[in-house]
Length: 147
Image (cartoon, rainbow, N blue to C red):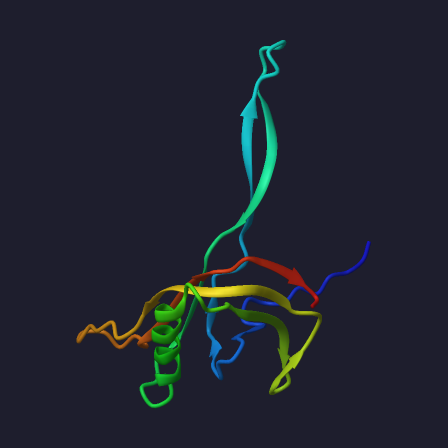
């Protein structure tokens, strides 16, 4: 039996094509097949059939830096205004090892035609010492491993 050496959740570098930022958290790829039930009319057992696939929206978050994150705010505002005409961007989820800088290991996951649907920033709580975050939620058309 082959030995495995799994990586941790922190061993991914997540970027969106055309943006200079990386993301701290990524909700992961959720790819689900729809199912339907049917009866052939002869037996008393319902049958399940696997149908088309649907990928679930993704959530990206990072700490908010008011000196450098205007690019992300501008991205949201421009993409929202032009989202019906705009072609989506590519999201790359690259496994890395830190030695001490990130070094790619294995092949990346690639999410195609990412289009943002929700943007959250500037949540405030005067009693909190938590890091302020930017959250970007969006949909994508498909994904692959190794391209």
